[in-house]
Image (cartoon, rainbow, N blue to C red; front, side, top):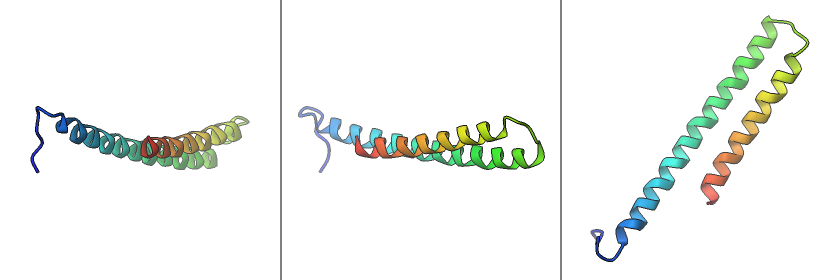
Length: 76
């Protein structure tokens, strides 16, 4: 079935492509946040500082929020 541009079927296909694009982008962002957590943990092993636990907590919060981003893009 080809999309009929007069009836508005193209809008359904456009929204589907847009949703897939946003889900893929949020998955890439989740992978980026995993890398941030990994780099933060390796940095805290090499550099001892009093702010290391705070930075590690922020990196895990960033990871959790990236996971919520994936769930919200799938749900909406």
